[in-house]
Length: 143
Length: 74
Image 1 (cartoon, chains in turn red, green):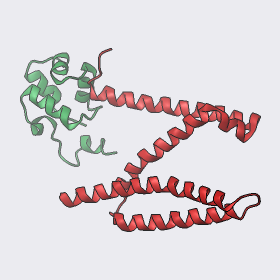
Image 2: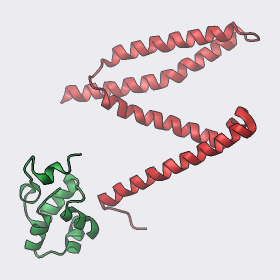
Image 3: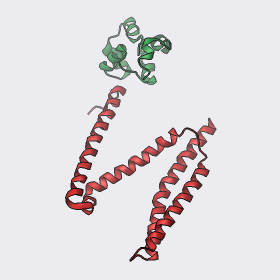
Image 4: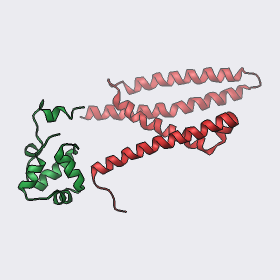
């Protein structure tokens, strides 16, 4: 197949892919919705389509971060924002970890584990946003 | 957006197909540009200008506030 070089057709192709993506997402949501009503929450999450859906949501969230950082009206200090975010996620992880530790049938170890997982899960996007803001600031200074 | 691509192309005795081949796009894209129904990228504008031996000003300049400028602002 010949590679499309025409920018208008490339753009049109991207628009078509967007329509296909919407149809596909609606299909996935329909399948998951059906599983949720017929087999319950566990039945839905056991379906491999659930993993596909979650991976695409995460990829979409990370790709959206580059847009959000560029769209920020005023350039924030990356280091200050990083410290604020780290404080917030540390407090959040500590609170959830404590709640888990003191729940019935749970140990302190479980609380630490859950708190640690939550901390790491939030740490990755926070560090990614820090990198994007830092790169933006460096690019702005160099220009 | 309004432009002078058609005038420039005819003055160089080029058909839409020939201009399309020189600029690496399809004939339909050239047709839509001439009708003002497709806004080409700056890269394609330059390719068209190179093909017809004219400057960007001569082929694509429109006064701000003119009808052809306003209709493409949104």
